[in-house]
Image 1 (tube, one colour):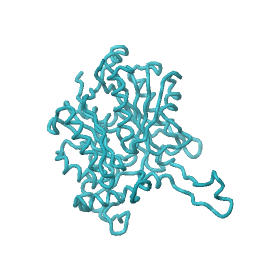
Image 2: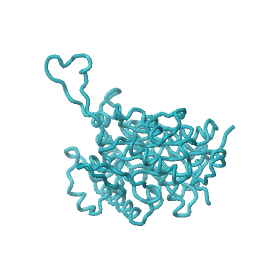
Image 3: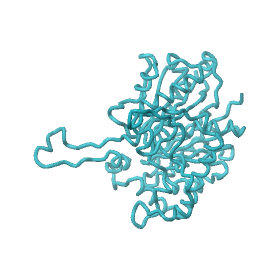
Image 4: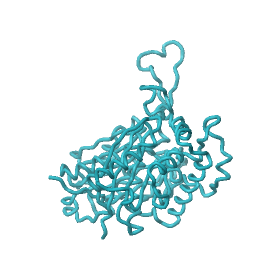
Length: 401
């Protein structure tokens, strides 16, 4: 039997800067705080959760299978199966898609989908140390952060880090540095307007973090957005690569964060007495792939595939959330998708707010549901590209109270 899948509610941590407020904690630790708050405010007990899925892209071996670790930390029963997946930047959204499919097929009635990332705690490794290659001479210490930014391209062909891909997009799509910088300002400005206007308050769970001297502090506000940003200041930044157009100002940040979503079918809603925010339109989810050297196109392809499966058009969407890895990607995809800027990332995107890769797919989907409610709108789509040329998308329909 096929049921409906509902996004009941979602929460997230404030997004931390690289080496910022969340650095002292493992993903499972701040992920558990976010998840416990989600359950408490909806009156759901840990024993009511039947499955946990999580997406992350840069795992710390200490934090192995953080979906299971979060489950144990929040007090979920030992019998609750849990898995963590890596689909690069699509990881969190794919965890949500799988969760929605599980409840729609009535395999489970009430599940959690998580998006987790701590870029600040990605380890270094020494290749060959296990098998004695260091007996004479030294060995190179490899930075897993850099290695993972190749998105696997060292295996299949010409190695390209994400900045290489962004520069390639700029050339192929004819997007200028000025256009990128202008969009970056929009992303920061909209993010700050949303923060100041309280539009993110329902999503964010304050995190208690340890200080350097044994004290603790409450981290409660995204620390990536810049209030002093301007096109003039961005124009003065040096490009990441000599002669290039990608800068630290027109790319998403390196960040830490966690997001959690509670997903149920009708039976789960009735059993737990819950009122959902939105319904997953199904068919209306998508997974696609494209040329990795033009990975940004995958978010357009994914949203179009989701719309096609739901027999809908872009004009049927009141809002669109598209993750911003780089401003060039967003500008190119907005053109290709013919997306109206007034419906796109209306409360800022990952350039302004930050981009913990495993978290972002859950964050933008939860925010889409909240934005529809706040603006009294009906339908929206969320889409995210990944570095190896993968894309995912979901469609949501608001459930009015």
